[in-house]
Image 1 (cartoon, chains in turn cyan, purple):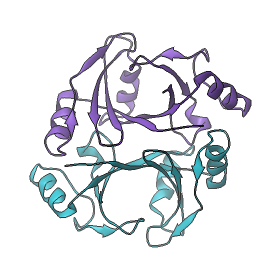
Image 2 (image 1 turned 90 degrees about the vertical axis):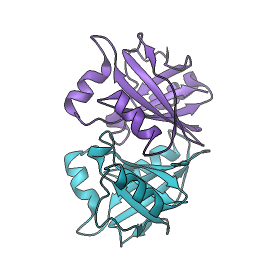
Image 3 (image 1 turned 30 degrees about the vertical axis):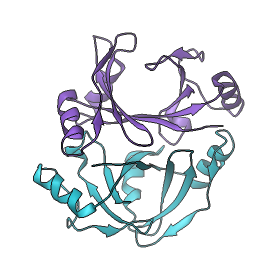
Image 4 (image 1 turned 180 degrees about the vertical axis):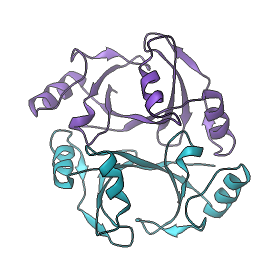
Amino acid sequence: MIGRLNHVAIAVPDLDAACAQYRGALGAVVGAPQDEPDHGVTVVFVELPNTKIEFLYPLGDNSPITGFLEKNPAGGIHHICYEVDDIMAARDRLQAEGARVLGSGEPKIGAHGKLVLFLHPKDFNGCLIELEEA
Amino acid sequence: MIGRLNHVAIAVPDLDAACAQYRGALGAVVGAPQDEPDHGVTVVFVELPNTKIEFLYPLGDNSPITGFLEKNPAGGIHHICYEVDDIMAARDRLQAEGARVLGSGEPKIGAHGKLVLFLHPKDFNGCLIELEEA
């Protein structure tokens, strides 16, 4: 069912420093910051040959990243995102297996303009998983 | 400098359950467990179309994963691995930028039989990074 690894999301405490480090020391292709006010984050994509790294930085007063950075002041891996062909079918299959979908259980439009869902980390080896309809 | 994302490593508290979940509910191609006594881990690779997920489970009395699972009983993302063409050049470049390489600073043979190094998470947004010579 799951397809490509769409991205690995890393919450960073200093977006400029993270971009400079990946562009400089690590020699990667780093995009421009994009504010996503609906999601409370500013995102930057690092383009690797086979997938992307997504930097997440808090935007606004109710960012979902603020609490994560309070617990992890140096930053840390926030989630990984798997692509699926049909997000409703994926949700139904996972819920039938007893896995918990976060929030209302209805897909939302994610930062890439695609339908996304998040799965409960406790049900997936402590790992927050985003599913994105490819 | 960095190339493909070789894998995302997830430390799991129950290897059989993780394999069954990825094979079943998530419908992925999951390999057979491989004991790596030199690294204190049993590994399983999940093959995605563009990269791999590596499950890590403790093997033996001095596994580097035991402490991680004590701190994260549900499991969690342990590291991500970027490929590089020349690991010695990568090390020298990163050290010149002030980044810390873990251990002796000399590459070792990793779980895939390739030369690897680990970079200090505090220097990389709280994220443990493995570099593997492709």
